[in-house]
Length: 446
Ligand code: SF4
Image (cartoon, rainbow, N blue to C red; front, side):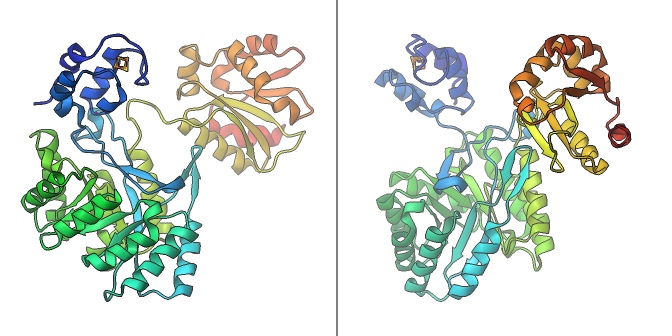
């Protein structure tokens, strides 16, 4: 049975030395209990305590690092069945399939097109992470050549997909530096695939025909010393596949079944006859519980909604979504353009920036960190006071960008106008509309 935070705390050195990255041993114990920390982060645990803590320190779904560079990701590391219980931590990685028989020219075109699918949202760059290279025809040289091209000429990380051990070996030699995921060890090749994964220190996926069928294979690999495992219960029928993923997650989290405590890889590309349907199936897996979701292709209309869904599912429901504090240019503003200020609640930002954009009046929008609260709530909570707003405006750097001294504050924060004026001597503080929908008329009338 997993230990509670307090039980773990009793086994720690209690020196609060902070070397594990948190201020106290108690905080570390709580993180350990919830699977958010690794025991190895504390260098002072005694061997005896280490043994006792071994079980408690392992997250119920093991986090597995895959890939290198800006598109590297972690699959797993989850601690709850339902997002509202706490949060989901590691976003599902999204990949697309390429056959090893693709021509060089087509591969180049695909990688170029796919690389362009990057979307800015709330200060984040949303993009897919993976190319899944599927062995077609068992040609190990072709497989290695394509793996090398993908690894060396693109940011994408790889899943090497073949059950042929020799083909896999060639693929690994070509792109090992990118830490690819090996897909897959199965009943027939588990020993050889396991050895390849172990020798090269790479993560490996395990495929079986059922959840139960995964258990002996996973036990075999873990006995070989492998820890970085991804699972595929095998079903390509939507309902059955979802049931399998739920069963595995439940067994790991509620039943304490360590053999199933790994993140699943899913294949909507093998479960639908068109990309629209694949996208719907992929949406299901992002919500429940695909650590990796593989499509047959990337297109903007499929990928963008999936990336947005992923962004929403994998944010902490107890924390409001925010945008980064700073100056946002809307419609190429110049030194005479109006300056507006509001809070960093993502919804506020999107509504206000959308209305400014719709007004066709170029403007500077200052976003002040108010811990993700809307204007009224932030003002009531003292997070959007006149003094704070004034100091923020001074520090923001907007004074280097405009030659006027006029600031528009939200109508709902009219009460802070005097304090802002005091903090910004010489500036004129205008109270803008209460409702964002009235911003276009307000800006055009200025
Ligand atoms: Fe406590 Fe170990 Fe963290 Fe130091 S490193 S604060 S001893 S848990």
